[in-house]
Image (cartoon, rainbow, N blue to C red):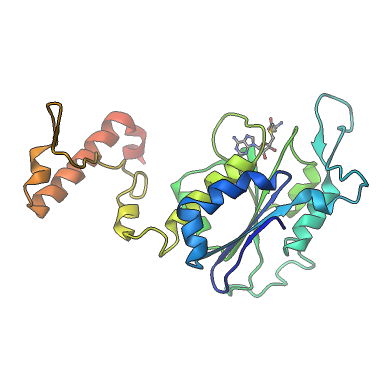
Length: 246
Ligand code: SAM
């Protein structure tokens, strides 16, 4: 375990990776760092390599059947998963609907379901999430016997699952109660209610002749709310009409 931030009654996320140091900066700063300090979140970064039985700590091998590239081996991944309770002895051996219910296991993969706000919302209900980061040509397919869901962050291929795992973790953590100070700001965010966010402005009210919309300086909160709703709708219609159809 490279990085461990613990707390008793909070969401637990275990990330299995061969590059644990990639997480140090992003997870120490920003909302994730704050959520860990506030004991809302408990993140462990697990180094898959330390579960390799190979004397050189190898975690990859050539693909059966030939072909280019390497494949992440099954055994180190299996033992890493087992170390965080990700291997079920018997299905349903964890008490359902309690904090002890079984961990939900996600493999970051370009072949998975594309991440969106609905998936993020649904993931906030898990008490324990295990995220597997792949590398090389991907993982030995037999790992899928332990995986509940494959998640992609878009139709392009990255070198590894670490950045996708950070994206997923960050999006989940933002939605956990107590992480973002003003809860309403999440509800106004793009996609939360199917619309894009409205435009934002701050001081100064005029910069090099560029003015802030008059209504925002009026102090009339009812009118300001109406303006925000109208702008959110207008933006969505212009930029993402597909969201309105949904
Ligand atoms: N050969 C694989 C394919 O074409 O589906 C791509 C392997 S990629 C080079 C290595 C790892 O990066 C994957 O196993 C996955 O964990 C991660 N990865 C790459 N692109 C991703 C994406 N768009 N979303 C989520 N994970 C991704």
